Length: 190
Image (tube, rainbow, N blue to C red; front, top):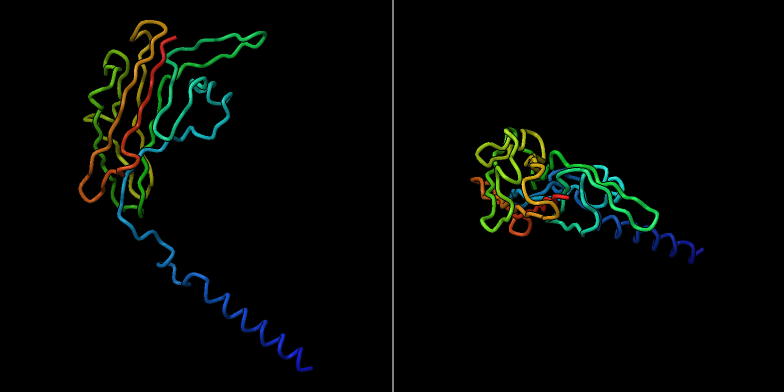
């Protein structure tokens, strides 16, 4: 009987000890408390290569967190008896993500085209009217907005790849993440 009481006591004591390791029940303790940032996110990572090719993303080159290659027009490649078709990417969306609590008003973020870019705006690509003035808007109560890039078919010579880089700029109290403030899109002209 004494052993049973000892085991029961150890079981109860263990339960209380483990319960003390759980987070606070207060919801505020579970909310993000850090600074508010904006950053680029490559929303095409982790998608099957066949799905990406159907969307105009070139999969013969490696994607990263901060870059991808798109095809300005449809083309096919043959290896042995297998033919792979890569669709045209008429609009590429570069996701800008808000890291922090949702805001009750739209967040306007300014970006710049990096000076070392080989793709020329107006020749190799254009930006959507939503990005006039090199701005992207993250709507109120949302976590993301998009830079919409439209590659121009035949903007460069066939077989060339031109690269455009975007850099997020601080927007008042919302800062650009120093780790994910640049994103590169390479435009392949088949």
